[in-house]
Length: 199
Length: 359
Image (cartoon, rainbow over the protein chains, first blue to last red):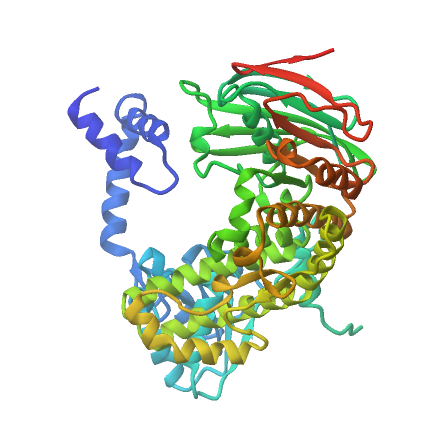
């Protein structure tokens, strides 16, 4: 269309999950259809850029040095749940099942994609562990090969000789799910991860 | 299993074809480069979505077209019949079974087994270990789904480790990937050690049925490293880490395994006569077919590209005898065969991508 418009579409297309058509639609929407929203959007982007950052302790999103979860005194500081991304934290948090603290790695090891230990938020995890307050690490990473390798790395290199309990989240059937509709890999994990029945 | 109807659209040189198959044996006759093998290739794709001769699926799509479509009507898989539709596009494959989209390849592989016999088979004897490994993996994966999963994960982990070797990464990072690699290696080794003797038993039986001479054929597993235990393989990986770093790839493991094929205690590749080697090739394919049937209860469809015509009368007759009743065979050749053992072929004449059923 115009060079400036094309440039905008190109920049939007770089965002995850956006193809060319969606990028074009967004550009048209903010420029022509609903220009009144544009000022708000620009302002929101600018203030988010200035104010939202990583929590220096756990890597979660925060507007302060330390995020709300880390500074909440009611939470158990002895329990740290390690997740791959912020949305994973949000998902576990909304389940209300975990009352400890989190640690967000912002990725998982994948040499092919160029992600090594230095690309992950591991240094601060090491620091937290060596402070000695934590007694259990819950590894809540996915069970694909990179997720498993990352868990292995954490246990071998970071937990190392600290006297910690290390647990891995369970993998298996969704609650209320029917065995009939589960795929074979899930069923296999469910069978491998079975535990003794306690009423 | 039996394929009762096949429809193809813009598949290589075939614009459109709709063939119904009656009886169990079908012959495609025609001059060279008319489309006979293309049809067998299309039939074979129903097993593992892979062509037995092309690496790049884009070559399968007819020139100037965007996609190739295949629809198979299949009987005798379990207690039901199925309609399988495969849509090959430049950017990927879409599969539907009875109208239901299959999103994961692993849920599909092995459901509709075929066995291909072609002139390339001689590479199983004369070619590199990679050729034999690929064949072995195909056979084991189509009879054992967790083997396929392990193999896929093993190769992903291997690629990650090799990528670390190239970067001179630290040993802690290497260990993180070696742990998974060792788990998978042990499982692959176990399945190969358990199943190759079973495959060898079928090969021995089939060879005795095919070959006019009473010879002893042997297939033996030649593991590159005996990954009996996880610890053992981990130790091996650690030991060879420095060398692997220099060579920038993992030197030992199931990805270097081989199969030995021998006749009367000697390597078939070096000593077998042309006739013996040919018998061995056919016996291998019959063994493959029986092995798959024994494992998942489905008898594979046999696709014979230009090989049956080359057999002498005795071997040909032995072949039909060994094959047994009820196995569906699709064969190609330049000449319409005589009636084999009183079997009546359904013959199609192939010309420039069109197929006409002969009377």
